[in-house]
Every structure is written in structure tokens, then in C-alpha cells.
Length: 316
Ligand SMILES: Nc1ncnc2c1ncn2[C@@H]1O[C@H](COP(=O)(O)OP(=O)(O)OP(=O)(O)O)[C@@H](O)[C@H]1O
Ligand SMILES: [Mg+2]
Image (tube, rainbow, N blue to C red):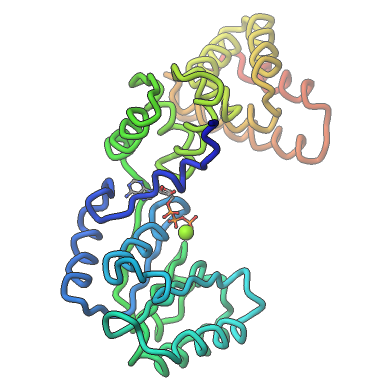
């Protein structure tokens, strides 16, 4: 039977031991869980850095099989305002926890709440402190009002280092019988910037095309440019080999189905790796910004990209 499960769920770590990276955070949270006592927690960090995963592990470790009865997940930006949140919290908090002394309420995207809503949340947190612990998740802790911050132990999540990502990818590769080389892992890191969710989605999409995964396949899957291709285009343009540069670019766009905005972004990213002066790089970045603006405004994209390449001539 075909395997239709989504890898981000299939391989979501279920225990503390399965987690890659963030050793310090895990150690502190684990200590709370082992003591069967914890304050409210605030998890801050970028998308795909493992906040939801850790909150679920806390609940599963504390409550075992009955974790679902003791864990309420709410999304602050989905719900129609704080009143809905409070109603749900109230009815959930009314009954005692089946096992242990408290239940857990996980409020995702807490930074989507307005300041007034956060004030209301703060009162709710106080009201149910006897029976509930809150785990709040947000991208930016600065958007959470001070009175809430001071009631929580704060954990700052970062995106994963390449080494942690490699471990996670290799585990999946083994399970799914994939062949994957170091270059492909580097490419995964490059396109995801350490966002594990993106890594898994790209990996799964690549594996649907070919079980033998290399960097080219990864870049094609996300319709991103390969850094070395962009380098080549830039170098040709700088050397004045305009035709070659242009043809190579066109080829890349057509074969990989890239949008012109994707191309400008990757040129802007890659030009910092050229061996030319900083002044020249700054000129080029400004030119990229100008072209990006024109593209957004709806100019003919290939003319704009040609103009961009032409402007790079003679930079050193
Ligand atoms: N420490 C980890 N080790 C291995 N895989 C992980 C780890 N943390 C998370 N993952 C994987 O990365 C994916 C994204 O994690 P998660 O959903 O927890 O991110 P998040 O921080 O809640 O993101 P968002 O802010 O977008 O909600 C999960 O599907 C999970 O499989
Ligand atoms: Mg999440």
C-alpha cells in the first residue's frame, strides 16, 4: 500500500530522547517534567524550530496514554478572539486532571493576541493557576506583554544547526530507504535555513521524485536556484560575456520553472560570495532592489533580468 503519511507528523519526535539539538532547553524542560511540577512556559522562536513538538512531548511524558484528556491546544490567531479562548479554557479547567495535579493548555501563536486580549489572558492564567499550566508559543517574545512574560519561564528556540539537521535527516533516510549525500544535506540546510518543517517537506517532495537524493534534486523540488549556477551567471555577466550569462539564466529559469522574483532573490543572496569589492557588491544589491520593485510593479520580467545582468558588467 502506498505510504501517504506526512513526514512532519510521521517523524515528529515523541520523547525527549528523540529530539535533535537545543540541549539546554531540553534539559531545563525535562527537569520540570521529572519533578512533576512546572511553572507556565513561554516558547519563543521561528517557525519549525520545534515549539509545538516540545509542548506535546511535555504532555505525553507527564500524562502518558491519557495525555489527550489533559492537554488542550488552542490557536490564538484562529479563534475568534480572546472570549472564545477564555470559554474553552474555562470548560477545560473545570474538571480536575486525571493524572497529576494540573492540566496543560497550549496556546499557539500567542503573539497574535492584541494587548487587551493578553491582559484578559493574564487574568485567566491567574484564575486557573491551581488546575492548569499554560504553555504559550510565539515567534517574538517582545510582542508578549511584560506581566505575562514575568509569570512564565521563557525558552528561546533557534533554528537548527547543520549538524542537528543532518542527524534528523539521516534517521529518516534510513527508515525510508533513501540514498542521500552530504551535498544534498547542505542543500537542504541552505533552502530551509534550519527550519525543520521545511526540511522534512522538501525531503518528502524530493523522495517522491527519486529515492536517490542529490543537491540538484533538492533545489529543483523547491524551485530554488543552485548557488553554483547563480555564481556562474554572475561571473559571466561581470566579465562581459553577456550572451552566455543570459542564455544560462534563461535555461535555468525554464528548466526549473523559477519566477523572476526567485531569481532576483537568489542573485541578491549569492552576490555576497563574489570576490569583488564591497562597494561593487553594494551597487549590485541596490540594482537588485530596483529591479525587484519593477518586477513587483509588473514590468516585463525577462527584460528586467537582462537589464540587471547588463548592469553588472565590469564590477570588481
Ligand atoms: N528537536 C527535533 N528533532 C527532530 N525533529 C524535530 C525537532 N523539533 C521539531 N522537529 C520536527 O520539525 C517539525 C516542526 O516542528 P514544530 O511543529 O514543533 O515547530 P514549531 O516551532 O511549532 O513551528 P511553528 O512556529 O510554525 O508552529 C515537526 O514536524 C517535527 O517533526
Ligand atoms: Mg507550532
